[in-house]
Image 1 (cartoon, rainbow, N blue to C red):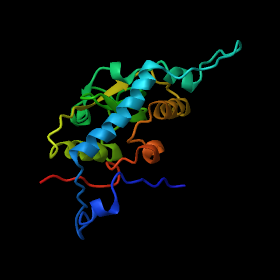
Image 2 (image 1 turned 30 degrees about the vertical axis):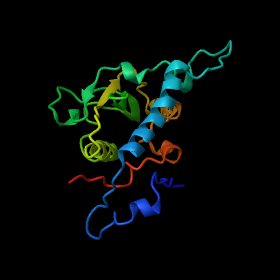
Image 3 (image 1 turned 45 degrees about the horizontal axis):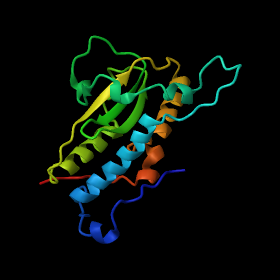
Length: 197
């Protein structure tokens, strides 16, 4: 099943944004952008303040993905520029989870996993476009934005285990750029090209 993205704007507000032969432009008002960010921020603050309770059993020897996820704080990881993939790396990197965060508010925008942290974004990656659209939406509104990425290198080496942890973190934080949460946030940064003059 393909998730359909809900629009933050009405059809009337989008009228005239579509033109033949180029990406549609989407003007986001300052108020709409700030309100969207505040909704995400308020939700994620509750996660930071009240991590989800996990019920264990006497016989649990291996923590579940949800239990591990509740111990990972993406906001405390060292920040890297999102253009890190352009730099020369001495090696291919390690298995990791990564978190794209706007540190200005702060809000967690995207959770991902990789088997080689220094190679993950070389080539095509949809999140690059989401970041560009998100940052571009801030410029005409004259709003500050500071999008960076952080890597958590303690991620499981086994792909399935790492992906289960990634999914637990996506649902825990409700990161709006992950497709699992598109319907919840109705983010306009996924499907539209946001352009500034």
